[in-house]
Image (cartoon, rainbow, N blue to C red):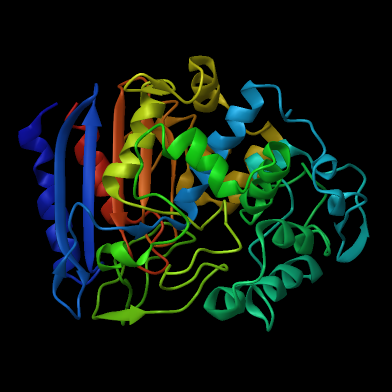
Length: 407
C-alpha cells in the first residue's frame, strides 16, 4: 500500500476533532496480515484530558452484531442450527406469532425463521410509535421496568427474558416480507444460549474471543480496566445524520451518560442481558483480530474460527430481490449494498457512497464504531469513536476512500 497516501487519514481525524464532530477517534488498517498504519486523535475523556489511545475500550453497540452473526455461523457449520429453523423450536414464546397487517394485529401466516433474525427480515424493530408492534418494543426498552431501567440499576432482565418479552407483541410485518433494522440479533443471542446450553458470553468467549486473543472484548468492563473505557459524547450543535449517513455536525462536546437499548452507561456491572445486537465492548486491536480472521477466510494465527467456505458465503450472501428493494428504500446511505448475516455486503460498488469492492462486508455502531472486511484484497479496517448517533459518517467515508486509493 501507498503509506504516504495513507497518512492523509491523520489530518482527516484531526480536522473532525477540531471541528467538534467527535471528541476522540482511532483507526487501524491491515493488509495481507501486516499492519499498514494506526492513527489516533482527540480525547477519550475530555474532562480529564485523557487521549484517545490504542488501548481505549469502546462500546461497540451495533458492531456487536457481526460477532453474533459469526457465532451463529459456527453453529450452522456443525449442523446445530439451520437457516430455515423456526425460532420457536428454541424459544417457544415465538410460536403462533402475530404481526401488523393493514394497521391491525393479525395472526402471522408463516413462522419466524433463524434466517429472518440474521437478515433483519423478522419484523422485530428498535421501537417507535408507528403502530402497536413498534410501541411494544419501545415499552420494552424505555418504559418503567424496561431494559434501560434495568441496565441503570436492577440489572435483572436476562437475555432469554428479553427474547420472551419481544415475543409478547406483534411483529411489524409478516416474517420474511420486509426489512427493518432492530433487535433480531438480541433474539439470536437467546437462540444461541438454548442451542449451546451456555450463557451467550461463555459461548463467545470459548469459540471467538479466547481463540483470537481478544482479551478486552466482553459485555462489561471490570474495575481494573475502567480507566481505559472511553466516555461518550454528543454535540451541542446536533448529531450525525445517522439514518441517512450524512455529514456530521460539529460543536461543543457534552458528556452523555444515559443507558440506551438496555446497555448500561458505565459498563461496570456484569449484565444479565447480554445484547447480541449492541452490548459488547472492545479495543481497536481486539476487534481487528476478529476482522483479520474474516479477511483470512476464517483463520488467524493457526486458530480456525470458521471454515473458508462459510466466510465466502458471508461475502456473497444477499437479500431476495423484493427484500432488497425494501432495504434500498429504508437504508439509502447503504446504496450499493445488501444485508445478510448481520452485515452489510457490497453488491454494486459503482453505486456505493465510498470506494469499495464487490463482496466487502462489515457493519458500524450507534457511537461511530466501524469495521470492514475485504477478502479479495485481504484488507481489514477498524475505526473507533464514541459519539452519539454517529453510525457511518462522512469522516468514516473519507477514511475509507483514502484507504482504497492507497491500494
